[in-house]
Amino acid sequence: MGVIKPTITLTANASTATTDAGPMSIALSLSATDSLDVTEVQSKILDMVSLTHQIVWTHTDFTSSGAAGVDGAFLYFKNRLTDNSPVDILHSIQISTADADVDGGGEATRLMTLRPGEFAWMPWDCTQSIYADPLDDGVTNVGALECWLFVRTGTA
Amino acid sequence: MPKITPTLTITSKKYSSASDAGPTTSPIVISVTDSLDITEVRQKVVDVSDDHAILFASDTEGTGIISYTDATEVAGTDGGFIYLRNLTGEMAAASQVDIYIGVGTSAALEADATAIRLSTLKPGEFSFFAWDLTSDIIVDSNAAADTVIAGALEAYFFVRTTSI
Image (cartoon, rainbow over all chains, first blue to last red; front, side):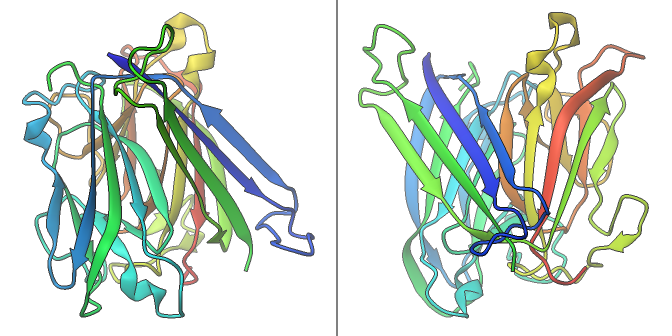
């Protein structure tokens, strides 16, 4: 078993700031850190092919029981595409729990959309597989999605 | 438009370190930051129990004063960012619980292999992820029956949509 240490900070200036004004009248400064025991690390960088969704992590690769608080992992995603134009939305990457195209409005299995430069960090209980689906911009975005998985389960 | 700046770092030592040895032969250092346009901030610290509840509703939030989108949520436009932290890590041992986060129709989350259980936040653990408002966010815990753990979960919702 090994130890990883994630730390997150969320900051915003007060709304009266002259640069990068925040969304509230007060400044925001959140910080959290933790020390996590993990048993395995996997990492990959995926191309995002327009009109093609793909599996990122298969839940049965890591557990067959899906016991809460025992089985699972921590996921890190980053959309590696860069902000470059008003059409950045066309380079967004969607993370879902369905083996399906989830571009449409209100797709219930689409958990999140990561626009260029955005990232996510969350535990994952391995009760469903994780898929990625790019918005249909008609191109292949090479090396678009960075994915890390830190297993905490002892059953992997 | 107002901005927030999230920063995440993930570090580990190499596995041969004498203390806090990492899981790999090389140290890991991942660092990322971003600047996000936000239109609204919602924050709450919620109690948890052995009963499930909706933490953030996809169509309405709070008392329904604010209506988010209605099955038309556009990817990359509608939605926001959720920050969650299990605060029971700072409480007495008897109050420390695992908090379950689900996505979908509100239901109990604790049973093995419950498909809608996305995450388990053990005491002190946190998450930060985008949310497209297409399904409700559900909370549940492994608190003992008829036991309420007050102030157990910190939750922020930073709205990026302009459609509310």
